[in-house]
Image (cartoon, rainbow, N blue to C red; front, side, top):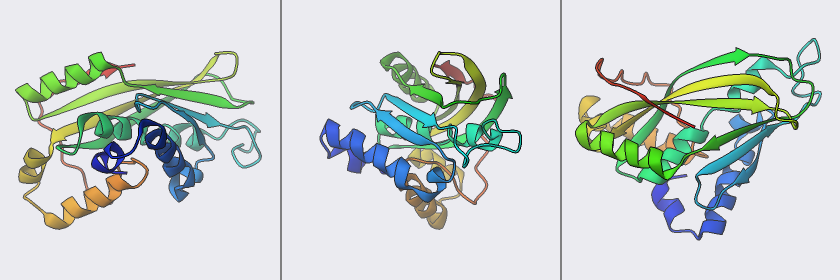
Length: 204
Protein backbone atom coordinates (compact mmCIF):
# COMPACT_ATOMS: atom_id res chain seq x y z
CA UNK A 1 0.00 0.00 0.00
CA UNK A 2 1.50 3.28 -1.06
CA UNK A 3 1.65 6.10 1.54
CA UNK A 4 -0.16 8.53 -0.78
CA UNK A 5 -3.03 6.07 -1.20
CA UNK A 6 -3.28 5.43 2.53
CA UNK A 7 -3.23 9.17 3.27
CA UNK A 8 -6.50 9.60 1.36
CA UNK A 9 -8.34 7.26 3.72
CA UNK A 10 -9.84 8.08 7.09
CA UNK A 11 -7.75 6.90 10.08
CA UNK A 12 -10.14 4.04 10.81
CA UNK A 13 -10.12 2.76 7.23
CA UNK A 14 -6.37 3.30 6.94
CA UNK A 15 -5.70 0.98 9.87
CA UNK A 16 -8.26 -1.53 8.65
CA UNK A 17 -6.77 -1.69 5.16
CA UNK A 18 -3.24 -2.18 6.48
CA UNK A 19 -4.44 -5.05 8.67
CA UNK A 20 -6.35 -6.67 5.81
CA UNK A 21 -3.47 -6.07 3.41
CA UNK A 22 -1.10 -8.03 5.62
CA UNK A 23 -3.52 -10.80 6.52
CA UNK A 24 -4.69 -11.52 2.98
CA UNK A 25 -1.30 -11.30 1.29
CA UNK A 26 -0.21 -14.87 0.42
CA UNK A 27 3.40 -14.37 1.53
CA UNK A 28 2.42 -13.13 4.96
CA UNK A 29 -0.37 -15.70 5.38
CA UNK A 30 2.24 -18.37 4.72
CA UNK A 31 4.12 -17.38 7.88
CA UNK A 32 1.16 -18.48 10.01
CA UNK A 33 1.02 -15.06 11.69
CA UNK A 34 -1.90 -12.67 11.78
CA UNK A 35 -2.02 -8.92 12.32
CA UNK A 36 -4.44 -8.46 15.21
CA UNK A 37 -4.14 -4.71 15.78
CA UNK A 38 -3.16 -1.63 13.79
CA UNK A 39 -3.34 1.79 15.46
CA UNK A 40 -5.23 4.49 13.58
CA UNK A 41 -2.07 6.58 13.26
CA UNK A 42 -0.16 3.48 12.02
CA UNK A 43 2.39 3.87 14.81
CA UNK A 44 1.65 0.53 16.48
CA UNK A 45 1.12 -2.90 14.94
CA UNK A 46 0.58 -6.13 16.88
CA UNK A 47 1.12 -9.50 15.24
CA UNK A 48 0.17 -12.86 16.74
CA UNK A 49 1.69 -16.22 15.88
CA UNK A 50 -0.76 -18.93 17.03
CA UNK A 51 0.56 -22.28 18.21
CA UNK A 52 -1.21 -24.64 15.80
CA UNK A 53 -0.36 -27.69 13.73
CA UNK A 54 0.50 -25.31 10.88
CA UNK A 55 3.14 -23.42 12.88
CA UNK A 56 4.71 -26.21 14.94
CA UNK A 57 8.05 -27.83 14.14
CA UNK A 58 8.98 -31.51 14.50
CA UNK A 59 9.46 -31.20 18.28
CA UNK A 60 6.14 -29.43 18.79
CA UNK A 61 7.30 -25.85 19.45
CA UNK A 62 6.70 -22.85 17.23
CA UNK A 63 8.64 -23.07 13.98
CA UNK A 64 11.69 -20.79 13.97
CA UNK A 65 11.09 -19.68 10.39
CA UNK A 66 7.62 -18.42 11.31
CA UNK A 67 8.97 -16.61 14.38
CA UNK A 68 11.42 -14.80 12.13
CA UNK A 69 9.10 -14.20 9.18
CA UNK A 70 6.25 -12.51 11.07
CA UNK A 71 8.60 -9.65 11.96
CA UNK A 72 9.19 -8.84 8.28
CA UNK A 73 7.58 -5.78 6.70
CA UNK A 74 5.99 -3.99 9.64
CA UNK A 75 8.67 -1.38 10.26
CA UNK A 76 9.08 -0.50 6.56
CA UNK A 77 5.33 -0.05 6.18
CA UNK A 78 5.12 2.17 9.28
CA UNK A 79 8.10 4.24 8.17
CA UNK A 80 6.79 4.70 4.63
CA UNK A 81 3.45 5.86 6.01
CA UNK A 82 5.15 8.28 8.41
CA UNK A 83 7.71 9.73 5.98
CA UNK A 84 5.64 9.86 2.80
CA UNK A 85 6.26 9.22 -0.90
CA UNK A 86 9.51 11.19 -1.07
CA UNK A 87 11.44 8.34 0.56
CA UNK A 88 12.17 4.68 -0.08
CA UNK A 89 12.44 2.12 2.70
CA UNK A 90 13.98 -1.35 2.51
CA UNK A 91 14.55 -4.10 5.02
CA UNK A 92 18.33 -4.48 4.85
CA UNK A 93 19.40 -7.05 7.46
CA UNK A 94 18.00 -9.09 10.31
CA UNK A 95 19.08 -11.50 13.04
CA UNK A 96 17.19 -13.71 15.47
CA UNK A 97 17.95 -15.05 18.94
CA UNK A 98 15.90 -17.90 20.39
CA UNK A 99 15.56 -17.68 24.15
CA UNK A 100 12.82 -20.18 24.94
CA UNK A 101 10.72 -22.62 22.87
CA UNK A 102 7.20 -21.43 22.25
CA UNK A 103 4.28 -23.71 23.11
CA UNK A 104 1.57 -21.08 22.99
CA UNK A 105 0.57 -18.06 20.90
CA UNK A 106 3.32 -15.42 20.80
CA UNK A 107 2.88 -11.71 20.11
CA UNK A 108 5.15 -9.13 18.49
CA UNK A 109 4.58 -5.39 18.94
CA UNK A 110 5.99 -2.83 16.51
CA UNK A 111 6.01 0.81 17.63
CA UNK A 112 7.14 4.06 16.06
CA UNK A 113 6.95 7.27 18.09
CA UNK A 114 7.24 10.95 17.18
CA UNK A 115 10.73 11.22 18.65
CA UNK A 116 11.99 8.47 16.34
CA UNK A 117 10.32 10.00 13.28
CA UNK A 118 11.74 13.42 14.15
CA UNK A 119 15.20 11.92 14.59
CA UNK A 120 15.00 10.23 11.19
CA UNK A 121 13.86 13.41 9.45
CA UNK A 122 16.69 15.38 11.08
CA UNK A 123 19.24 12.77 10.04
CA UNK A 124 17.93 12.70 6.46
CA UNK A 125 18.20 16.48 6.30
CA UNK A 126 21.93 16.10 6.98
CA UNK A 127 22.46 13.06 4.74
CA UNK A 128 20.04 11.59 2.17
CA UNK A 129 20.32 7.97 3.35
CA UNK A 130 20.59 6.16 6.67
CA UNK A 131 19.96 2.95 8.55
CA UNK A 132 17.92 2.29 11.68
CA UNK A 133 17.96 -0.87 13.76
CA UNK A 134 14.87 -2.01 15.66
CA UNK A 135 14.47 -4.74 18.25
CA UNK A 136 11.30 -6.83 18.34
CA UNK A 137 10.50 -9.18 21.22
CA UNK A 138 8.10 -12.08 20.73
CA UNK A 139 6.25 -12.68 24.00
CA UNK A 140 3.62 -15.07 25.28
CA UNK A 141 0.40 -14.05 26.99
CA UNK A 142 2.24 -13.69 30.32
CA UNK A 143 4.86 -11.32 28.91
CA UNK A 144 7.69 -13.86 28.83
CA UNK A 145 10.15 -13.21 26.00
CA UNK A 146 10.72 -16.28 23.81
CA UNK A 147 12.48 -14.76 20.80
CA UNK A 148 14.30 -11.50 20.02
CA UNK A 149 14.67 -10.25 16.44
CA UNK A 150 16.77 -7.30 15.32
CA UNK A 151 15.91 -5.75 11.97
CA UNK A 152 17.94 -3.09 10.17
CA UNK A 153 16.05 -0.78 7.81
CA UNK A 154 17.55 1.34 5.02
CA UNK A 155 15.88 4.73 4.34
CA UNK A 156 16.77 7.18 1.58
CA UNK A 157 15.37 10.14 -0.31
CA UNK A 158 13.76 8.73 -3.44
CA UNK A 159 15.58 10.99 -5.92
CA UNK A 160 18.92 10.27 -4.27
CA UNK A 161 18.18 6.53 -4.33
CA UNK A 162 17.26 6.59 -8.01
CA UNK A 163 20.37 8.55 -8.92
CA UNK A 164 22.51 6.20 -6.87
CA UNK A 165 21.08 3.12 -8.59
CA UNK A 166 21.54 4.66 -12.03
CA UNK A 167 17.97 5.78 -12.59
CA UNK A 168 16.85 2.28 -13.51
CA UNK A 169 13.16 2.78 -14.35
CA UNK A 170 12.43 -0.93 -14.23
CA UNK A 171 13.99 -1.19 -10.79
CA UNK A 172 12.01 1.82 -9.58
CA UNK A 173 8.75 0.40 -10.91
CA UNK A 174 9.53 -2.93 -9.30
CA UNK A 175 10.29 -1.18 -6.03
CA UNK A 176 7.04 0.82 -6.12
CA UNK A 177 5.00 -2.26 -6.97
CA UNK A 178 6.66 -4.18 -4.18
CA UNK A 179 5.97 -1.43 -1.66
CA UNK A 180 2.33 -1.40 -2.66
CA UNK A 181 1.86 -4.96 -1.42
CA UNK A 182 0.89 -4.82 2.27
CA UNK A 183 3.85 -2.60 3.09
CA UNK A 184 6.49 -5.27 2.64
CA UNK A 185 9.83 -4.22 1.26
CA UNK A 186 11.29 -7.02 -0.84
CA UNK A 187 12.76 -7.39 -4.29
CA UNK A 188 14.57 -10.05 -6.27
CA UNK A 189 17.07 -7.35 -7.21
CA UNK A 190 20.06 -6.73 -4.99
CA UNK A 191 19.59 -3.75 -2.73
CA UNK A 192 22.23 -1.03 -2.88
CA UNK A 193 24.72 -0.96 -0.08
CA UNK A 194 24.54 2.33 1.86
CA UNK A 195 27.64 4.43 2.36
CA UNK A 196 30.21 2.98 4.73
CA UNK A 197 30.00 5.96 7.06
CA UNK A 198 26.30 5.57 7.82
CA UNK A 199 25.42 5.46 11.45
CA UNK A 200 22.22 3.72 12.46
CA UNK A 201 19.93 4.67 15.30
CA UNK A 202 17.77 2.46 17.45
CA UNK A 203 14.09 2.46 18.06
CA UNK A 204 11.58 0.70 20.21
